[in-house]
Length: 303
Image (tube, rainbow, N blue to C red; front, side, top):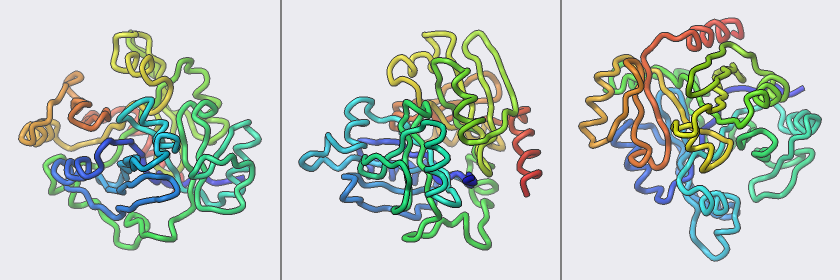
């Protein structure tokens, strides 16, 4: 049985990687530890750190045939949007075997079907089977993840940067039927249900997954809500990432100083306008919610 480890990265497709990289530098003062071009996948990408969370902006490279590549097809259909979420695993072959038992289809980097991973460093799931695209990877051999090294610290983004980001709170994934979330996160990924919420706008289930991830599975109840609109436009998949910050007023002032449009959701959360964030929905919250408390309790139990 495979063991799901630390979140690796959240990938989002952009139309201009240079512009996205400049935005990350200017808004978040990120630590960039990878920027490369992958010829076989016809894409270029960066890996950047926001606190302890890794984002991967990726741009399809428009060379002959690019529109038929995996990322090119996604961009042609959805434009700039979150694409997939990746975790580290201890054994890629065992991961593929276990996922196959749950009737989950898998592919390699260039889209070839995989039933048992005997080579390569990563596999991807079919988004129809897991209701969002997932990547599972072994620890990198061709670059160094700073978080996996001795002496790693988030002191600067938490204590010195104006955004005061303490950690990633949760990632929101949209479902047409919330009952499907249990099969994905509890059964296939062996996560733990830690919280439930219902509102006039949506139904939510929160799962602790792997070492450090919290997934909010959402079924929109209102077609006019942001979640409902995105489900209608792009279907099931990753909708947003939310960060825990120390001071929301300071967050708002910093974002406004860089001409970012923000939208408040009550007194304890704000979002960057998605057009300013390359099609992403990125939020910041300060509330000590049950979800974040339970996350720390579970994390302590796993140590």
